[in-house]
Image (cartoon, rainbow, N blue to C red; front, side, top):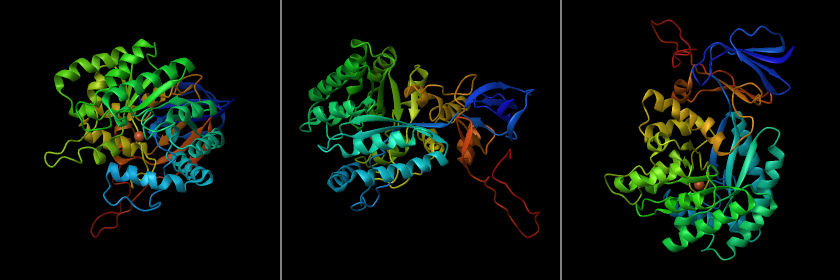
Amino acid sequence: MLDLIIRGANLPDGRQNIDIGIQGGKIASVEPALKASAGQEIDAKGRLVTPPFVDAHFHMDATLSLGLPRLNQTGTLLEGIALWGELKPLLTQEAIAERALAYCDWAVAKGLLAIRSHVDICDPRLLAVDALLEVKKKVKPYLDLQLVAFPQDGVLRSPGAMELLKEALKRGVDVVGGIPHFERTMADGAASVRALCEIAADRGLLVDMHCDETDDPMSRHVETLAYETQRLGLQGRVTGSHLTSMHSMDNYYVSKLIPLMAEAKLSAIANPLINITIQGRHDTYPKRRGMTRVPELMAAGLTVAFGHDCVMDPWYGMGSGDMLEVAHMGLHVAQMTGQDAMRNCFAAVTVNPARILQLDGYGIALGKNADLVILQAADPVEAIRVRATRLAVLRRGKVIAETPAQTARLSLPGRPETADFLKKSI
Ligand code: FE2
């Protein structure tokens, strides 16, 4: 006798009409026409059942602070950074934790059950670090929160940042971050990559750097990141976030760079919503898109994820924790409209970021955690197209969030009443 069976599920890999048996919070069977009974059954009715969404790149210390202390009038990165500088002295640990917890509620409702958040450590009080460590503990039963020690003002450029970063790691922050392109010189940027990778190697930690988040084609810190990864034996544990300079780089140089990145088993995270709004802002026309070379990196075998980066903060006034919106934008910006490419965009907000976060027990297979989302869509492409409603979100086999199916009823003269006209399958 199982605890729960979800019947008639479509899976992201294309299998249809599959039954998923769940026992003790784990997946106990995945097969068609499962002959077993359970305390509870859910009929998925041919809808897509997926492992949860995963956001590999977020800033939870800033989220939902929109308008504090004022709005970003230009919408530019530089005004956003200035605004964050104005907000930082006004922050309290309680307020950061409260906003982060509110965002985690939004995330759960959207089936987003694992988030890697950067936390700014350039603050002698380390308020945000303590706040997010507390939030991480609180949300653990329903959301995996992984924290990155992020020196927003430059680990070498900002006085005391190196010691603060080490202190944050000591307090329990999981991953080593960096921002080499924001250091004073290219040489300092490279030195910061080297020092930060050494810290990670010494402590057995993962690395995730904001790397080359600029339109400057000569910003090549990712090359150093790949080199240091190889030198220190960190293959498979290092991620370059943003990598927007790659959009503008010389193609010949990129033909050398991508194989080096693949050799070092780097992962890459693009942040389509933010990259498309922040990059290319100094251009007149034509305006560069600024997102990194996602399909090319995927084709070279790198694990590539799409991150949300910001939701209603000094840099970005939009967003709602919906990783399907992120995938939708990524698909458009990268022109990933081929059939496999669209499915790869779904993978970029599910299985790929799960691999980058090194999440245990992720996926729909025997013995994995029964963490699942039932979507109001038949397949990954439709899910992205309609930013499908999360009908049910399960954590360890228990429903923790439900949203009613979306319908629109049309009453038009001379036409029969219709519902669900947007959905082809439901
Ligand atoms: Fe970021």
